[in-house]
Length: 387
Image 1: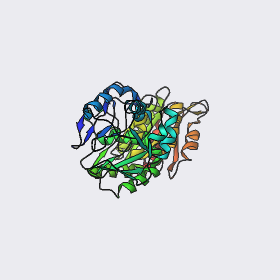
Image 2: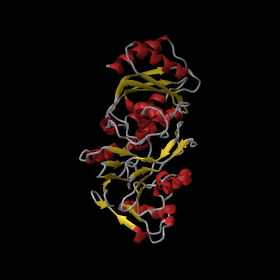
Image 3: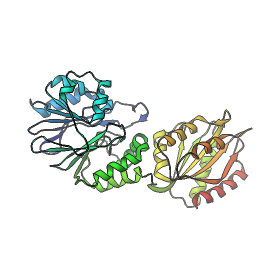
């Protein structure tokens, strides 16, 4: 699929609608796009390649856009295989092509590829360096740990375009008609979420640039209302809640903990909480549960005890939140156990290691099945959570 971004810049990426799991873990019901771009000038520049799943279509898109011309430069923003798989193919097709990247990129390249005469072909760039290709000038912005250590972005100064690597990307193919915020949020927190400090550093650099268009490596090209996308990234990367609301994540073995979680959701709504999202951690999309845990300012954990610990889907959920730097939220805990409840203790051990979280003092303990006393206790927990 070729699309003109400007007279000289062409989108040559590919939509993948056959993939089931992105990075072998994230459900992508609407697929994913692998974005790549060609800038034609006195020197022709390819901005990144694509995943091996899209090689043939991408290469044909490139040939169509080149119309018989050669590739002079390949800019490598990120070496993850979904963007870099075809570096060697392009090097073999264009033996005079130079590779533009930073020191870390060239340190990693031999771990993926065997490129003849790599030393002679590489052009090493650093923070703020520029390369003129004719009417267009490329300025390079280092973005380490957003979300790999070698990542860099490129600012094209003529048309004021930021080639933003994985930043500002989203799940879903380009022809998918869906809300950007939702799938970009799920993408951000699950893939980039741990690296908020590093994203904040890049946003500060971006604030000094006059950006008119953002071209990410996944998802749509952004041209309108760029302030909205920048604001979302600022909120997400500073770990501030995006909205007021409650995420209830439950891990239930036989359905009794589920019943308690659903009752708690009802009590919250009765008490005036407008937004309550409910997730079955054994069955629902974990990435979406993580997304909502970061989106809202309050989190309820409800889990059954299991082998003197906590039911594994809850342990995995909390492990994922911890790994993604979960913080600045209020947390309530509900446990279930028939003879020796252990879930609350294990959940507390995990959440107490998170930064700047407030844990409700009241903990609900259910013995096998919720009873009327538990429901009354839950009303008190609702009140404490909503304070």
